[in-house]
Image 1 (cartoon, one colour):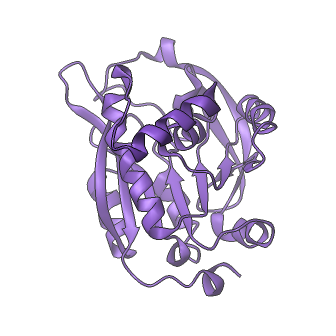
Image 2 (tube, rainbow, N blue to C red):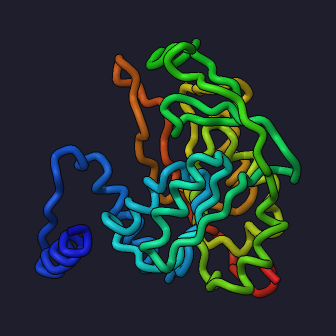
Length: 255
């Protein structure tokens, strides 16, 4: 059914029309932006950091129309098992059962209910009151953490990474992933990071800090899309899409 839906959307798009479910209207512009960006930069692989249950993979396949490799990173064992079951039907989807951060080792992660909120950070309910501690926190697990710099060489030897896109959705931990990817970043053609206007986690970087950090590393904003709003319609987070403003030499940076 999903294959038929994708085919129908592709056919109608060729005629200059879009069929968009009402519930997906806010995400439609995001999907079209990524479609244009991926085509322009000839993106051949998406590094999906913070995969949870594969929601972003579904977004890429079903909405963006991306058919290239997706390498998903997820440390929570329950989610990893689900991802591997799902990836059995997608030959261009690789699951890595560990987290990415600023240094390698073992680290405790707060597993939440719902589990897409799981984070190495402690929840902060002072600014966003969508949930209470009783509704969110479930348990703590110890998981493997590696750096993108330490694993990218091995991944590149077995998968096309000539023009990679980096997606970060780690619930307040994105900056730590960036700190562990200093050698890899010059080869990243574009990326998206979840920046917090109203932080949901303690010690999470502010949107100003995240934007300043990425600008200093040579990335320019192409678009920002609201992720969620509170009860007063204030934006909680944005998905910020950024393009590498400098030249890219993937062979030099990823070998």
